[in-house]
Image 1 (tube, rainbow, N blue to C red):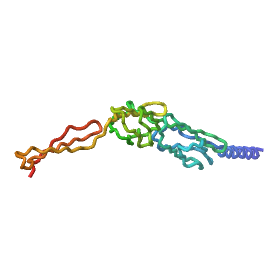
Image 2: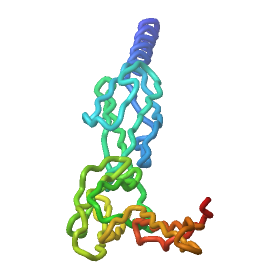
Image 3: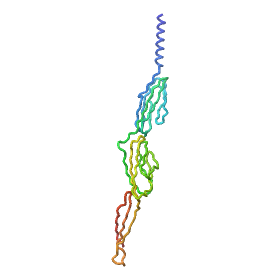
Image 4: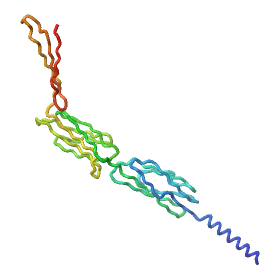
Length: 242
């Protein structure tokens, strides 16, 4: 009788051990990842005693590798650069033999500057396109102020503006304000357009000869130029005549 009891006890111990060995386990560490707007890569550790798989929420702004495995595994999560004005989040589910663990991902918005960039330009009166730098690392919107100013195009690098010809007879002022999509000012550009555009002009004056039968002895050149703001003062240059 004792022999049968011993055999029965041993059998129960073996069965219990086998059941303990086959009980699935799953853990993911850490359970949340936070990224800056620049993105980058971070890893989580999957610990399990069986095969596992993961499922993303379908977002295309991050990648995960590997997406399945067996036993303990390190999984890498990589995020792209982000330029919008709000945080974005995602969830990844890990599954192993009926067990589920969730990894939460958060990416912060770009950090806005304490003070916006201030730009100032002077332009001539004729119609023209003008390029200014775009704020780096942001999705932005543009507000134009001033009649005769329009937007040609914009991208991550540049903002191209068009100014109509100034035929008003006086200087006119414009402003361009660049904002985040939630109205935080990133850049402010002011323009003054002159009411005239002058080209370089040379004026020649000859000195009077001592007698009407002599040739001029000195030639004086006066040069008048124009900048985008105002004409320069005449510059005098004298040279002897042979």
